[in-house]
Amino acid sequence: ILLKRAEALKTRLKVDPKNKSIVLELINLYMAELDQIDNARKYTFLIKDESLKTNIQNSAKPLDQLTADALISQADFQADLAQKSTNAKLILFKRAAAAYENFSTRFPNNGLSSTKAKLALDRVKKIIAKLDKPDESQTDEGNGRTFTYSGRNLIIEAEKASKIVKPMKVISNRGASGGKFVTRPVDSSEGSPTESRESADKGRLIFYIQSKVKVNVNLSARAASPSGSNEHNSFFVGVAKGKTEGVSFSQWTTTERKEWTWSTLMDRYYRTREITLEKGLNTIIVAAREFGTPIDSIRISPHNPRAGDSERRRRIEEFRRRFSEGGRSGRDRGGRRDGGRSGRGGGRGR
View 1 (tube, one colour):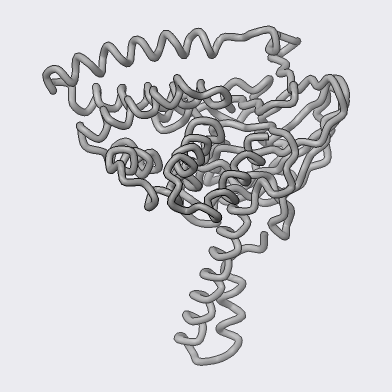
View 2 (tube, helix red, strand yellow):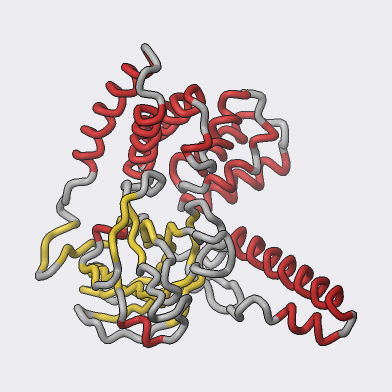
């Protein structure tokens, strides 16, 4: 529904590009409900409010790169978005808390601003504690929690998976939505990266999902690539009916960006790929593929075949860029056509 609303606003904006209310509604939808910062940034050139424009741009930057004033402004901005949000309230409040905490750590003696940040952080933490506790849709079952999908966006922090199978490890990180992420640490004795499906048995996140009906959904992950490349940016993923660990795995390539980014599950041709939740209990497993790939959260949302369109375009452009650079470097080395082919093979097939 939210994605359809965004498409409708974009259509209206094409007809009336100077309509400020449409621009602000679209930006607010991307920022406060869909948590799609990159899409919101595309429309900042249409707004005159420099403070709003700066805060949107800073939302995509690591907190350690922000000045004291920018940090306070960003924290207040995220907290304000959270107050208005229906679907992304918890993530936005956690983002605000991370910014307040970063400020308090880096600028502890900044007068009135330090006092303000401490009070705001305490207030936001209390809100998070209320929002983040188990509710009627999350109950303890066996070794872990069962989550209920009710037709709306369901976001689950990776560190709160129903089961975390070693050597998957929870790592503290202020940039992560819940202050933590999960990864399969690199082990030099086993080589890195590991691409065999056998690695799926060496570290798993298991999510038990209850559904009242059989339904097709989109699966997304808030992930990052530590190297900012196509290294350390993939998992295996599998889904099955019931409470089981016997699933059939397929590859899930996430983002090539260093910053946390939502990545929709796609097939090898970069087309949005849905998964099916059967009526009753289901098991989703995200397993290690390339060691060192971090995952912050997963999101289960109503199926939309165009959910990953912008990501698809970005990945295709990135692939073309790597192919072009590889081809040029190959020709530069020897001026031979096989150099270009070698360059093309420099990036592993996805």
